[in-house]
Image 1 (tube, helix red, strand yellow):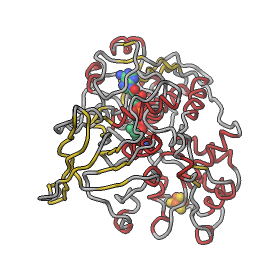
Image 2 (cartoon, rainbow, N blue to C red; image 1 turned 90 degrees about the vertical axis):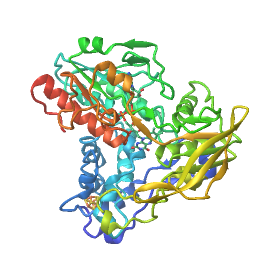
Image 3 (spheres, rainbow, N blue to C red; image 1 turned 45 degrees about the horizontal axis):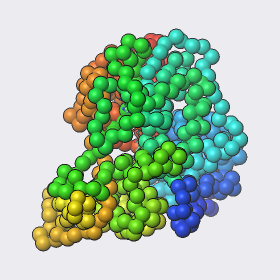
Image 4 (tube, protein in one colour; image 1 turned 120 degrees about the vertical axis):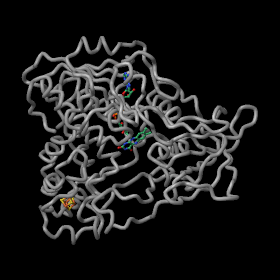
Length: 484
Ligand SMILES: Cc1cc2nc3c(=O)[nH]c(=O)nc-3n(C[C@H](O)[C@H](O)[C@H](O)COP(=O)(O)OP(=O)(O)OC[C@H]3O[C@@H](n4cnc5c(N)ncnc54)[C@H](O)[C@@H]3O)c2cc1C
Ligand code: SF4
């Protein structure tokens, strides 16, 4: 604890955002990390709690009080080492994690939490700027081969850990570029894709091989699921060629809204809009969906919906409305009841701030069209009664819409992939494997990330990738020194 009185002397200082009118002009990141002086002051606010709730609230158990102290003392390089000891990709979490650590911070009980995420962001950016992030290839190779199916944060974290343990790792990806939802899904304005290339270069130098445009399975996934594969490898072949296989294919099955009019032109799954947008920004073709001059309605109030809002505004939409079936959450949580857990409260993202009408407790009954083209939504207001959503009588209304994005979450991983392997599924359709062994019902097939836990967060995917890597290392070698 650098400064015992820091939490009483200094206020929380947030990162600076470019003005809305500037950031809407393109898809660049618009959040500037803290200056050294600001980061030092934020570090000084940390109380180095006897029981650091932040560390427990963080799914990768980042050793937060230590790097807060190191930043306060100006020892950035060591802070980066501590940060990397628990987290393979802080350049991602420092940008897009919702920061459950901050909800858990002791200071959050009666004050503003330490700006943990902003300090993380500053540490990794400084590491990048100074060339401190270098490959750490294994000193000894084991001769064992591991295949990782899926190149999202779970697959990449597992691949990096296993390569550092000396295994020969190949990552297979059905899409044309590596990164999973980090690459194709999350908009560029939230996460600059050059960061993925930068980290991939480190993995490649550590020996990880990447094979893109390659689908592992039998039958290709269905509508609404991105697939650029030019080649298919059967699960049997993969199991024959590798000593262990990790399934890290994400939870890609989008939740549909099968109401009348679903087939109308203009009704799309969110990722049918967001993925081509990432590709357009990367110079890989034009987004076939344009929101320019259109009335856009986004159905679903989470991260994906918010990303559709931000992207539609960058297209120059005439209006953007986001509706959510659940009632509006309170602006402020009751901390006495919720701390140190993640509270349910109204969250306003930077995309919302850029311009969007938000409404809650609305159910969509029908998409209305003319000549096959969407024109409006027929909606009804709902309320929670005895834990169930029921329609409010006489509350039907229409919402003008040329474009609708369905952003109601993802139900489960693509069943065809798990079925092709013969992997047992949970009642929700996720790959069945526990969080100790990460092993499926098949001896040498493991599962991690959204494919195992269902739709979640990047930080959970990194945790599962790391823990799964340790389980695989133990399986291959009998023991492991990889951290869990
Ligand atoms: C639009 C959007 C915004 C989000 N924003 C945030 C955010 O701000 N913060 C946050 O923490 N989380 C966010 N999330 C959630 C987060 O992206 C995911 O939880 C995380 O990426 C899951 O990681 P994963 O590695 O398990 O899977 P994914 O990232 O989904 O990667 C899985 C990869 O496996 C590939 N694959 C699947 N099956 C096969 C196969 N059979 N053969 C070959 N390849 C295959 C897929 O093509 C994909 O590239 C967001 C999600 C979406 C959709
Ligand atoms: S809970 Fe907050 S104040 Fe306590 S150690 Fe963690 S970051 Fe510091």
